[in-house]
Image (cartoon, rainbow, N blue to C red; front, side, top):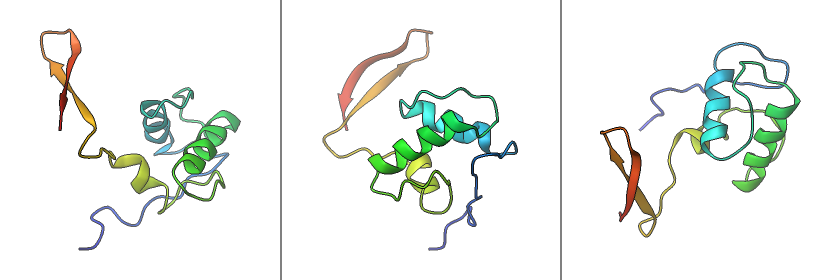
Length: 98
């Protein structure tokens, strides 16, 4: 089945267009310390390279068709725990095995 959102956008240092903010949000969600300002600067580039290196990709700092799928798709194993969301405002309250 072809990728439903292909082609993936190419995003690199110096870009200040969509989807830089989304990229920064995804990096933060994966524990990479980067501000969400919509500017692909040196800190975003360093976070991208660290993410790429940690995910078996060439650490070139360019987000394209190989990096996006690893950023946007959660990678949980069968043995990984999932957190339970508490809609009462308490956030994540516990763990449950998948």
